[in-house]
Length: 219
Image (cartoon, rainbow, N blue to C red; front, top):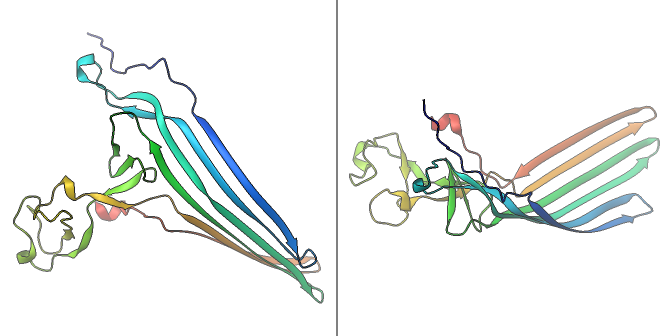
């Protein structure tokens, strides 16, 4: 039996740090019937733990952790509620909307990106964005399938992958940003009616402008 170190321990690891700014405005109008708020927020997280490869000549083959990543989230949030009565019936209408951007702003020196299966981390992009080949329909016949590198085995019914750089081949150079799994905006609405001791309410929520990976279909 032999023993060997496999994981490089970094004694300089520390807690990540965050800098956050919030600016808000609350308002009440129409004799207190209409109320709401508007907020701007910005949060930068520094010293994120990033796993980086270690030279095999060190004797270690697993990745090592470094405090060398920065991530910024910023956006706006708006909420409004209107409450009034018609006779003995009271009603409430409200809504909220949030827009947020997510951007990785720093990676360890000498590293352009980090690949996580079908996702990637790189500077100037959202955290863990999808990275791969774009598609443009499916092949209708076998004759449509190119015979150049990268298309071997493709046949009628398979997806058409886009040759982005136009070299007539399908290579890693044709992979690109496909979208972010992090939504850019969130919204909601609430409706309520009350009469004496009876009340009914409806709440609607949603998110938008994000990408979902259909794993079962990919298999």
